Image (cartoon, rainbow, N blue to C red; front, side):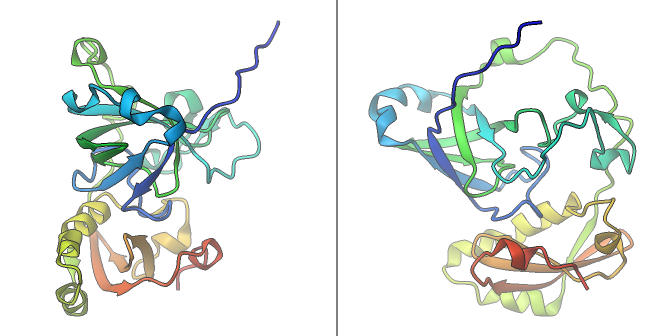
Length: 248
């Protein structure tokens, strides 16, 4: 059978997101409605013309490139977090580990200013290359009588989120005041349990964990069904090797 090669992709811009690393980033868009990002379209794509009319839409599709994917070989079955160790076909999931690491996200378009899109309900990290932007069209993008396959039968339990006294004091000191919205972002993020259920070190009760959000390092632990935020600290510069340290 003859195979076809796709021509090289063009990156139209790189996303600047409130999420700084894979751990802690929502697994799907709109799980954290208050999450935000901006996308500046590169000059060679004439944003003053190519973005004309886009501000009249409420939502857009983002086609992205999973640039941090470490997948080197094709695996026809994968382990979605919802299946708690079970397997499903890669094309019956939204895993980033795909033959082509291309992502599809429906995000809310807050506004367009010159060459920049301001977005919310994000599930992508800062630095994600964007391949395309397409307007969301309810007349054609809403399917009639849709089925959600295995997903409704495998709901992911939500965590209760609490803030320690130390974390609350850290939040009181945040500057600029705009960062005061971070408690809601943290709570919505942790509510959906960012841990990898197949990683025993992460799933151990009381394990000390952390992730970057904006320019803060969010420290937390999970015991039973409760996630406790233990600190909201000024972050050291993001370093991949640093972030891959095993939790204690």
